[in-house]
Length: 276
Image (cartoon, rainbow, N blue to C red; front, side, top):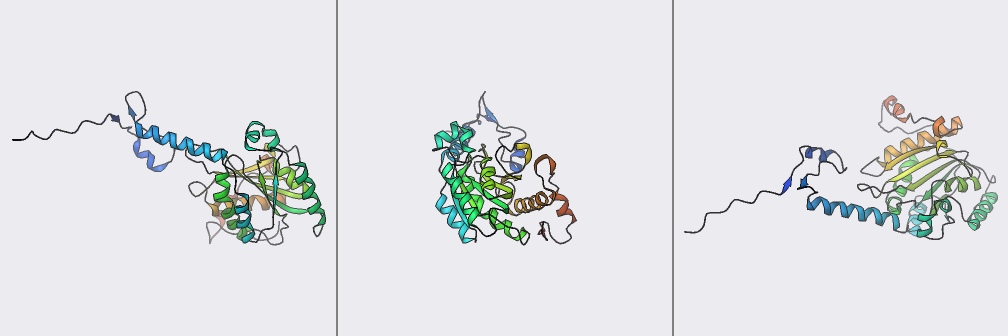
């Protein structure tokens, strides 16, 4: 007679009693433990997430691909670079990422002066690679496509500007060159361990060099797993309209777009009508 089947060895992993919460969030909660440490599979997942975040920071933005996607949507596009010559300099010198390359500054000002009506427009949209080119490659074009139906008719736009090695404040200098009343910066946010591709949006009224973060509004975590394109586009359009109407952003402009959604009888994400 053969030996009776042996019982399986007990798992060395102690499950966390809150593990059901993991179905509701991508955050690293209720991981369990193996002895005094994390289980091997969770350690491997942590390493993978960390590698994704590092790749998102160091990867270069495919400017040509993004430019083609925007032109297909009907946007006029310009491409610029900050004074950070390369990625290493960009990461070590945040101040250079906030300054527009001198040659690009002169080129934009000349293009704005030659445009019909001269150097003045309502809105300048800048797309910066920031700390996650992955976020920009995945979400910038779909977000602008979702934004179009919500835009008030008659709004005057500068060309969409794609900025490499860019920090948020670079949009102030770009928009100032076009004489824009409002700067809208779409930029890759600092990656997290569960969100390497999060896109942020910053709005600044009367953009110019020296503006502070308190003078901006921010919409964060734009991506399918976070704030959807349609919802982000509605919030952005609402803030754009109110910023132009009130002449202010930042602490002087509170995001009350949720009230507009609640007041709409027909749609969860209604279009904004009328000129600012």
